[in-house]
Image 1 (cartoon, rainbow, N blue to C red):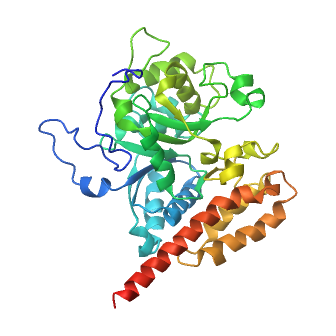
Image 2 (cartoon, rainbow, N blue to C red):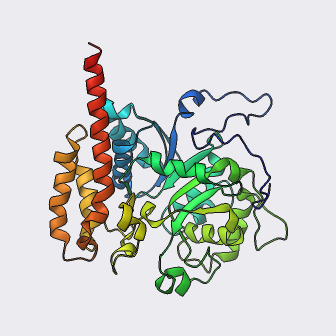
Length: 375
């Protein structure tokens, strides 16, 4: 299959509903022992190295708090962090741990020099490029950076997989909304997608399609598979890229634009969307769906609105009332952020999370009333 082969038939279009592609098992291949549960999963992958343990746990917490369907977490981390992840996740109350399963994987790179890959941009960030190679039994997943927070159910972005056409195999948001002040349009020394490039901090991936596609490239006239392409691509552009694996993804989709679905900015909302004035219309209309606190804004005072959201979710006791222990403290913290441009638009940050919490509350009331009615 090539990326522009619109007639290619991969797998029945179940990947919007199920986490593993069924009906594509090779003759004689054994059924994976975890398939029944993982079939029901929305797969979420993250890469955590260095001091990213807490950030990763808060991201996972936001996913579990608001999502409806079962989650399967794929956590890639250094060996030293594995026992900490196990310990912390097992401390969560059973009412929440029953909503997910998780696997922790070592940092591995199937091609090229592992030390080079580890040092590309942030520690271990390049691991995300190898997900299609490592997670061979997973059809589709959502990859996020550790500094992401979900303000609505993952179910909602998972539905975007159903909107892919026959050639699309990944989805990301634009790097910027305004080309004349975007980073790529002003400074990039390499090809990039579209007019502003794309940001890879939130990335939907149909891994089955990625594994089965021949990608056009600038190195040889014929196509290359994803795994074949990665290291030669890095070698060609390593002296011209600034943002590591994100730049490599931009180069890949520059040459294969029909492979990419672009979702709007509210699904990857960053300080750039408000720190110079509000420029994400989708968030203004619908509220922020996924918050991406890049540039370390959860841990300094440069963007207190982002820091407030992070701290409130971090400090929320799992089984407390969402409105009393999360929403109202968040409103209170926002009063201290009005001196910033991001803090002047609190409705943009609160709209989706309020809507989400109302649904969670309504669902709990329905379950409670239903249980009482049976008696």
